[in-house]
Length: 275
DNA sequence: TGACACCTGGGT
DNA sequence: ACCCAGGTGTCA
Image (cartoon, rainbow, N blue to C red; front, top):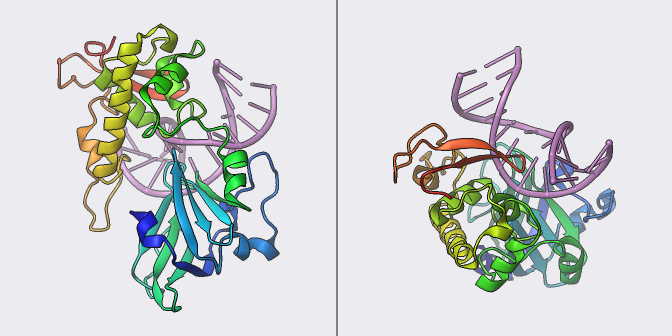
């Protein structure tokens, strides 16, 4: 786990390749001043904790400084035991040296984000992280209690898929996993969430947990083009039941999988299995 | 509530 | 050469 390996490491020698991956705190218009940049990127700080909520990560330093990472669709925080000699890969935006308490180099931390939909946001404290940056997020999809999950999804009049993707309702479910979870739960993505029974939403809750855990185990790969460092395909897309399979037959009931947009997102579902 | 912008690589 | 997908912030 990133947290265990990073804790108590000192972050030094930050290299900033692209300044524009540094984003302002929510609701503000300007990012940190250039003179404060390296300090805001935790340079010189020791890692006290690593946090995650939905699709966001954060590193907290012992002195209180915090750096939040919004993953977007291709953001990737890598810990490696290689040191500075490691050649730069495409789309590396930030790089830190990691030192142990004796000041010995122990590796690097690298922020890479090819599509640049993500970004990093410096914050003065964990309090600011929770109250300013993460306050609008719903409960994390892998931690939320079943009753809370059901109650939140049922609010309003939107389609169930729209609710699932709304990070203020539930944090952590993206488009692909929404489609896959709805398939497993046998729920049509365009049905109004408020009209779905609690027991079926309970089923959806378990499907969301299962899909996210399986995807994480498979290497978190969902993008068609994903390759691991050895060039192998990532695992999870091989098990997509509906996502990206519009026009093909459902493996379960042989019905043709349909596609349309729901809440502005590409959506695929099996009319035979999902009602 | 929705449309659009951002960005890039892969598919057509 | 063009179109599309992804997540989220911003605007109408």
